[in-house]
Image (cartoon, rainbow, N blue to C red):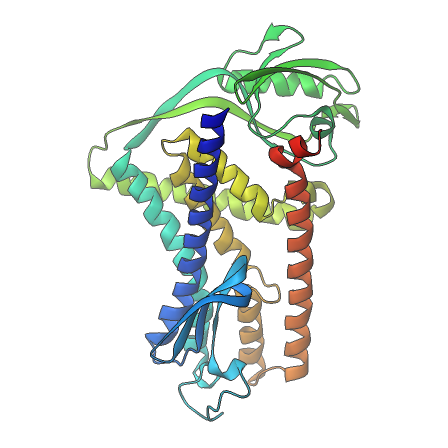
Length: 371
């Protein structure tokens, strides 16, 4: 068990490093878009809350803060006691709308460009995907709290090997066969044999009955490794990266669309920072192209999330900018303040709920609680 524990620690560090990189790249997009246009910037922060480390360079505070839930770039007009003339033409609010729109959208653009660059790097380093080499079993990649899979004791990372004593086999056919059996067995007890961290485990799973169809609340995928071949040239690398980028972006946008339009059904699938780190740690242990894909996927998710027209997000700021352009003047400050405050409450509340929920599902915590 010691090597597994060490590998997990390395995986967690790798996942945390990737998330930190994505935050830095996002905020660097805002920062560079502002400074390249001569717009004043007062601080560049990773995290929120009290400052842990800081350094001031050319009048700009670069800070690492206590709460690692994102980051921000601050401008002098955000500080009423900053001593900057309100009419200063280098303040962000005094610049033309196109320049301000570029600064606001630069974080999303930076994350999208990073994802594309990561996929290109994958092609240059590993090559072009050349099929999937499956191993026996079906991998559990996610479990929804409170659903049948969670009640049965299934955990992310479990490798399902047999159903009612019959080996599942491997590949996409094994996944399809298991899904079909679950869907046709609502309310029936299914005996699962699986492997968890190298040890055999037996569980009984009872799919929930939803309109006559069995549901367990788990994400399943084939277990195995992607195989790669050398690229035939740089154009093939660019084409493959662009195809992967378009496919991941399309699925991400569709996922957010489903979340917004069917929130009651999909809310349980939303993952917080703890679950994202756990998923990244699992992928880090798999090696190969898993971390490339994880980095691109989370970077695109971060870009799409920030593009939503919600308070405190880049999309919300662009929405205010659009309203200003249509009205010919900004919204009253009290309305902008109410918009921002509602977003802060929503963000902090959602983050707290997701962190508590995801932490309660972690394998280590369950072991400490004796579950």
